[in-house]
Amino acid sequence: MLSHSQQKFLTSLQVKKYRQKYRNFLVEGVKIAGELLTQHWVPVVAVYATDEWIQSNVTLAEAYNAQLTGVTEAELRKISALTTPNQVLVVAECPQSPLSAPAWESEGAFSLYLEGIQDPGNMGAMLRIADWFGFGCIYCSPDCVDVYSPKVIQAGMGACLRIFVEEAILADVKQRYPQVPLIGAVMDGDNLFTAPLPVSGLLVIGNEGRGIRQDTLPLLDHRVTIPRGAGGQAESLNAAVAAGILSAMLCRNYLLK
Amino acid sequence: MLSHSQQKFLTSLQVKKYRQKYRNFLVEGVKIAGELLTQHWVPVVAVYATDEWIQSNVTLAEAYNAQLTGVTEAELRKISALTTPNQVLVVAECPQSPLSAPAWESEGAFSLYLEGIQDPGNMGAMLRIADWFGFGCIYCSPDCVDVYSPKVIQAGMGACLRIFVEEAILADVKQRYPQVPLIGAVMDGDNLFTAPLPVSGLLVIGNEGRGIRQDTLPLLDHRVTIPRGAGGQAESLNAAVAAGILSAMLCRNYLLK
Image 1 (cartoon, rainbow over the protein chains, first blue to last red):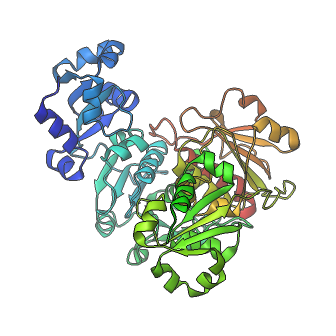
Image 2 (cartoon, rainbow over the protein chains, first blue to last red):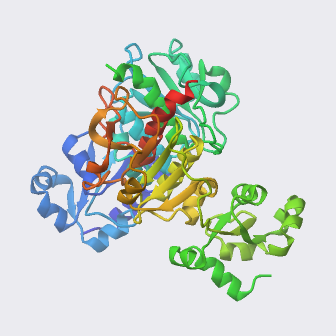
Image 3 (cartoon, rainbow over the protein chains, first blue to last red):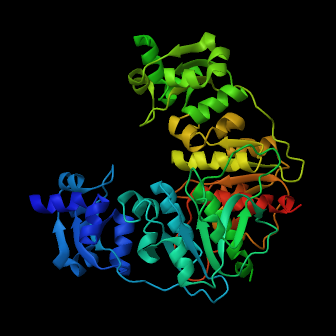
């Protein structure tokens, strides 16, 4: 049974301001919430689940007994950010400290800096890229969409639970790690397929519409471009697709082995 | 001034059934609609524009005078599929015949087969990939999201206006072009970075959740996997990101030159 104040608190977590205030966020659905409860990536504050979920997840339901509230499907619809709520909703704590600090020294040690990424689907896709290639960290400029928003959690398939995300100004990151090369995707850079690439570094991806900001460009050590094919007419690639191609090419050398 | 029947017809084009019935679709916004009107990729049936657009696009407004209807912003909101309508809405004719037939013979001549792609954002991103690398054609399985849906048009930045899209069963495409190698992204294939790749062919991308269908797998000539980095924990990459990485690696050899 869901109290009015619980309902109010839970729906407030769909808004960035309240996620930041309470340092809590929502993780929904059998798959992602189930993974979080099993893997203990971040502390769990509360679990709201339907009978159907509780009956198919007896062990988890017992393990989280103290935090578990049974809800009806109608109640779940009231607190869910999903169009089609899926049995379970978890309130989790935003990670406070690095899950793992970036190890810049080793070959293949890359991290991602996202500048003004606006689309939750792109943000989620980029978190998955970082989590696939084993990146150390994701830095986000303050004007990025919040990584703990329900849409990003879903699009990222929970990647932000496993990889350390930090809001940071690029110039500050550069100052903190002056030896780390910055690689940026631009429209008029060196051919990605022939340019010499560093064995570790920070990959900078710009906003979907305007790309990397003008005042960021001088900070870059490598400016690369994904060459367009013969007959290709597109003005640009989707930001997450470009990030994926660049990440793959950066990691390629050590993934050949 | 917009008549009731015009309004009814225009909003019906937000639905696949009516787009197929009338062989018409909507292209919206200053950027994409402007490109379409300038580039003549597909025949234009009608143009609905606000005074603001007409005044900033005098030459285009004159060129399309016969098809142009001036509308108020309130009227545009009624017929637009966008959350924030943007000055101009064009009704265009779905292309009937190949804009260009795939030239399989030459090096770098790739096409894309999309199997059960559901997300409009992914579909649009993949149209842009094909349009960036100069792919010959995009084939879509019948259960893909419609490429002429307003969300795909926006996400694809008009790519489907420039590249030939055909609904087709993969087995039929294979029968039509038996000499063309089929390359598929699977979870347990050869390392994409070391596997021998064909110099032209058809890249097959599966559904976002379940990947390439079991009964499609035997049709593939090359099964490749994007290797996961050390410490990477993501279960998969976003389908469009994976398509981008595969396309880049396929085109890499001829883009080195």
